[in-house]
Image (cartoon, rainbow, N blue to C red; front, side, top):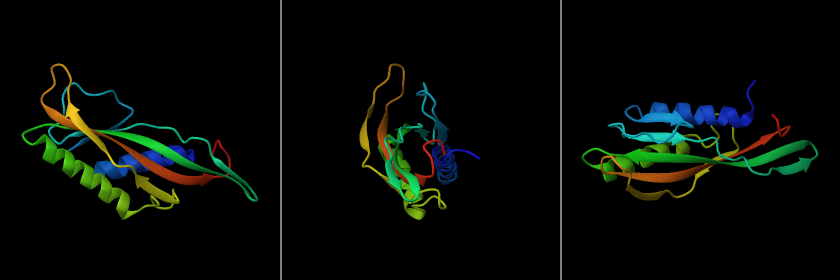
Length: 141
């Protein structure tokens, strides 16, 4: 059985892929030289941070910060970026427990910026942090 952190990351990636069929959704990948026509969404493993430890029963509650990079290009990069952000928001709002993997799932406001990379087409990008709160029986579980 996978660790809870890994289960959460796999489930988020799966749900993003289902909600964003035209985008390239990946995990822990370097920035692409070219933006896919439907946009690029990359999840990173992030940091579960220091847990809140409860002693009776022994449990560890994490607020796992999961970075997500979003890049949009094409004829209307700003519009595509907004669409990608909206769809990611809908995924989070649809099931804030990820089928029981989390006690709460939320996101911080995105920080959009122009895409500026040598040789890259004009585009837009945003960095987003998804926060998954979950409890385990062990720091290794």
